[in-house]
Amino acid sequence: MLKLPYVLIATAMTAFFWGIYGIVLRNGTKWMNLKEDTFQGEIGVSLRAFVGVGLAYFLIAVLVPVALLNRKRETGYWSFSGTMMSLFAGAVGALGALGVTLALAFKAQPIIVMPIVFGGAPVVNTLLTSYLNKSFNQIKPLFLLGMLMVALGMVGVFLNRPVPNMGKAKESADKVQVAQTESEADQAAAPEVKTKEKQGTQNWLAIGMSIALAVVCWGAYGPFLHIGQSQMGGSRLRPFCCVGIAYFIIAVMMPIVFLESTAMHQSSGYTGWGMIGSILAGVCGAMGALGIILAFTFGGKPIFVMPLVFGFAPVINTVGSIIESGKFDNLNALFAGSLILGILGAVTVLLNAPKASHGKPAAAPTPPQEPTKAPESPSSSDPYPSGNTDNTPKS
Image 1: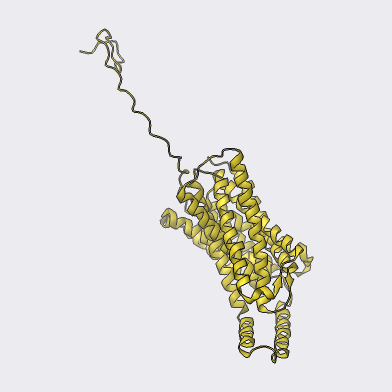
Image 2 (image 1 turned 45 degrees about the horizontal axis):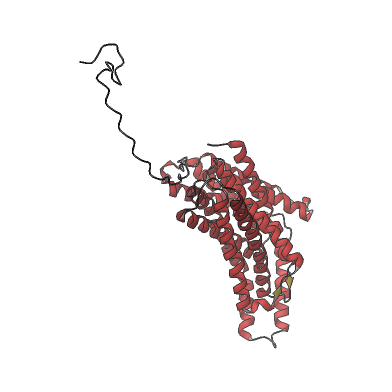
């Protein structure tokens, strides 16, 4: 049953926490120790911050649900298909978070990255939901117009971002990096220097690929998580636990193995403030994931919950970034108009999305019941057998 007020509250919860996720993660990354100002060092620092995100998911989305499940019974049940689908949804969510982490590592600002991610993800979400429901024939022209508005809004946000002289700042940073590279040329191998220069020139390509990874993965997160929850009988804690396990594998184990098996472990290190900031970012991500599960539990569907989340999260991100920087005078009309256009596009996608039903959660398997006995034939003394409603005896 759809409980709209609770769905909207849970959706707002996700929009808030995911809106501030990029800001908190950037600060956690900035506070992490960078021993050597190199490309590998920056990636190493970002991966260490990503480990903090994974640890937070493990604490909130694994230990807490397991403790609650052991203390009391919850609606739903464990199933193989539901567990696999929820793990897959968690893996998709973790890869999306990795895309955001890498985009920030390549010097992209959260005020650029997050609106683009939150603008493109609802389109992916709606298309995937329509594919899973076989409802492409229900797509309306206004739905296509909404997707176009979202795309134009993303481009406008990117081109009119309120970050003055960013190109000059990047150019100066590139010049400093080139100068440092030249001064250390006699100590470093020539192939390594060329690789660093090539990586510097490909920064924007890497940012674009990282953002695309986040858009696709976070757009697919909601539909797959909804399927997993449905296949667990509508359980809240079980799919949330699977999401936390997937995050622990992808965001903790894999980065640690990668860092320790490469030379990156020498160019960066963990710090207390860096881990605190990164874990707080993970808390924001985990609370956002919990909000989505709650929205689904109260009857919400991915085809309108996710566009609402991705429509309002960039507003929160933009407001938070401006408050953090204190640069209110750097806003311009084109940026605000582009942001509003993207939001209106997301709402248009929401209102005109295919309305195919997702179905009710699968019911728990019940044991077979004993066959009921056939009713005894009426006695000869009963002149009115069952089914005879008039007062005339049957012949």
